[in-house]
Image (tube, rainbow over all chains, first blue to last red; front, top):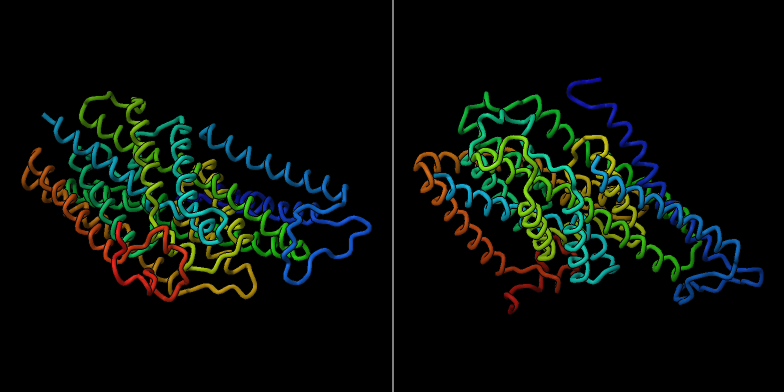
Length: 88
Length: 382
């Protein structure tokens, strides 16, 4: 413990910050990847211009996995709001 | 006898809260506006509403922004007033130049300055200032930038094969969500500071007994002031953060806001007070570092860093000078004179800003090296 820098709080902020602040968005990206997967017949549906209006792919497993990812992200946000309300 | 002074202090504190709001809109919304995830007007309205909600969420209002920084026994109404004037002045000047700088630092600097003028440097707890204000200020942008860099890198790596339609749509939603969280956290943290200042003034005046909770009217008026300020939108600061520092794409915007939200919430959770502005700026810088080929304009970053170094001394000097003038004239008249000077200075700066307006119309113009877009030569009507 140092009287100038609260190292104890600091490393927790860095580690948990990496988990929540970088990990959750990364999980969100994984979720996007999962829901966009196409099914068996799915040849690439986008060309290089990428102007495909379709948002969700046709792979049910992918969609379920994506939904799970988003649920975890939402839970993380819920915890964040809770910690604001609790005023800790 | 002090009721006139008290009224002026309350009005000035609410004015500070208002500048705090519009100065910091960019922290939450700059990236969403820059990437087009939200139209500018919708973004500031959303942020304003969430700041309002956030202000009411703060349950425990500490009457002591100054606690641990100055000897509270030296804090009189005039000291608080002069400190607030220092904070407002610095907020407005940095807004004019489009520099995101910490509103908390401006307020702390102003209060320290006026305390020194009132009670000498013995009235300041320097160890507290260094360990609670200066060191966190140096660390917070680095932590936020680190998290945002890692987040940006991971997001780009993991979403490489996602079709563009899904990608743009998804990350815009994510960006709006994370920016909303930052707005909420901002309302909670920053509105609370002004509630604390007003409560402190009420205690100093003897209206409230020491250790009292903030009265309901204080909570409501502070919530409205910060939310109205946020809705006004500090377009100059938004432009610098959204367009000037780094060219931002939706995935980067989401990474930046997630990093900001996580850092702000965690630091308040662990009792380590970090400035929202320093965190947001560090995050945006980090997204520029984490994406290959993204350009970070280090000259803009350098200008910000310089302003951050100047915040405490500059706001402190104004605070000290204001205390000197107010105490020199004495009593209610002294405070009133400084108040009138402050109002005149604000009006003058506002008119100066009108000559080269930055608003929701031109906030997203290409960055061509300056805050004000090149084609804005004449003042736009209304």
